Image (cartoon, rainbow, N blue to C red; front, side, top):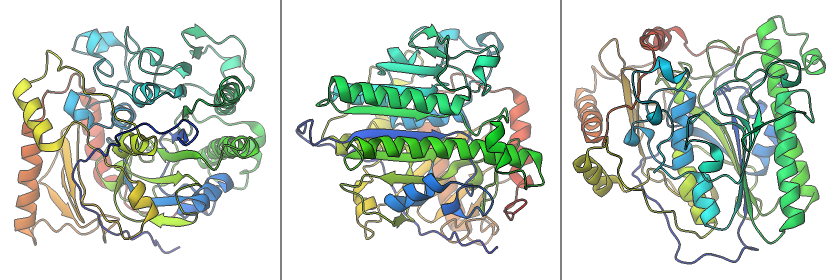
Length: 486
């Protein structure tokens, strides 16, 4: 197989498009976010996989715009979600590392371990705009007081507050709750199917009880995150694959794809599909331990190579976005908020007051320079192929940092000098240009340093030092490769 994922460049600056008036409810779209967890960049048919079966995701890509150069805010789950949920670079408010241990394991105050209360979520913004809101599945943005989804803009929550969960909850000790109460019975014995059931029930209830009220549902699946567990009948479809882990991963992706198909089917059958704005992507790149495949990208979850932060993204809105289109310019998960606000003709809620741990001077300086939010409204980009907005994105995690500026990306690993890649044409980050293009390297290095110095706060917590070494090891250990066992 020859890799054919060369992408065009985009350039950027932070803009938050706003509209003056709120449109009539009948004109505003319903909104669906479907998030996979640790999915590989190449692990859909439409992205090159020849072994996985993702007919519904492929059909979704055919129904709208497939974005091949989309980025998330972090290469690990929790800060990535903090970014997409707020439309703000999570480093702005100290949300830099993962939340993957008990509060007693962190050298910080427990009340800081989560999405800061003054940060507004997609649920907050859309509920203020008149939407009914629900989050189904994985939260991973704090478990203490004030961090619960029901306190953060979501009328309905069913799922787990933590970062991972086993997939057969009825047969094991589980932590699945519904609006603060433990779930006692499950409509499906497999968690991915149960989450689909729960979200569809919410949509059905909304249409029956308040058909004039638009709704927003965030299907936050934990698949295909470990533990690797799949239904027997799904596993049988992939028994021909020689690797057991890849079999299970393929079966988990098949169940996720089944959920996507069921969501679309219900919307079509109830006449809601044409006026539903839907976006699908993964929270970060493929992980080292779940048999995922990052296609032509170098790197994996946890590192700032493309394989950790670049994901395929699908946008559909049959009433607005042309079917069968492809967007090869830069798109970010930070763009969800401004795009949703533009689609609903609503204003974003104002930013909350600064927290005590923030440097007020830096906060004021950064807002003056970059605004309150970090994404842009991408609807013009998705509906007009001539739109190529200027983009600039930053990342930092566990001693490594990176900046994407147009076609170029500078990565500063934790364990060696910075490297420069032209990712618009070198998608696999094979050719380090830092010694040949010293002026550009110096320019981006200074740009990255200026951004870091302007952040209003230090990280509110850190991961175990183990992860820094793990990240450095994976930085070089995962080159682009052919799809395994095809």
